[in-house]
Image (cartoon, rainbow, N blue to C red):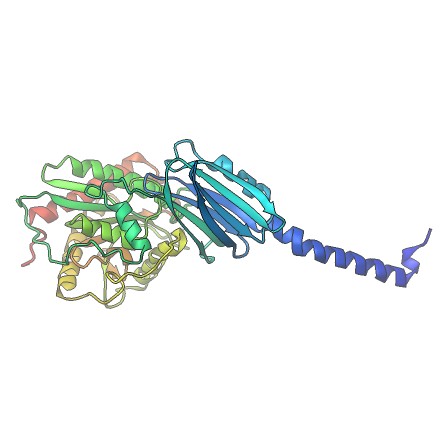
Length: 416
């Protein structure tokens, strides 16, 4: 038997062969087995989203088949792994659009994903670059082809379709200042906007409380309070765990001719000692504080985190901050003060005045709009409070009280 330790030439030869073998494995086996690191499915009544997260960008081809209706997506440069194999198990029986999902190795370099559908759909497939804690993503959005949702009561699906075409403003009414007077012939329309949703969890507390869940619970409580009022009507930008782009949230409020827009959130900061409730309004001239600027930047990143297939539309992307917008911001500040005053009775206030910054979700030019940061989910004590039905109800009642005062004074008494 040859002793390799005393044969440098043979030892170098074996090392070279081993290195070559490892290189060939790493190029094929390692990259293929580690590329897709997570798969997720987000079903909702409006659309279902499938997300494949990977360590490198994914290349794909898509096509439709019929009898039964199917979406086929071929993903290039990957091999089947345990993560991909688990996709079918994530399909819920209640999913309105997906009957079942199958994934298989189509050829040596391609994985084929087949989504068998319950109805004809209009797929939107696109990729997203890494953002926040997410890596590269391949996204498949499945929209109903026939658009059977009533646009009169909930125009969300139609607005999403317009948004995906790059023209969410196509059917919106002209911008006009609201009269703000109580006793009008039509009810006062209030749009509630629970922040985040679907792929975008929002902030997450130490005990894994997700912002998107808490704010939806609070919004539903507030929705019930408003629905009891005979002269008010309430809508939600989302009433389930679904991602809605910021511009579509604003467009839905304008489509339904809302008189108030209230976006509900739960703040987070790197310092867990930060605490308290806050209220924000739009600013077109820069933020009124560094904290407001930071918060607006993080909130505006929701579209990047949630993932949008198209960006830009002529309604919200060009400069429209005229006299109507200026008056609307003034009303937003007055309404925000009413809500902030009442929030101060149930929780510490982070700031004693309404702060301002360039929040994308507050940019309706003709609807007084505020963003309520109910509490700091990053603060351990406030996270515990946010999880309780008692505090959630207190927040809802505080906002409701602000709404009542606002409208009882004729839309915040503009002359004052």
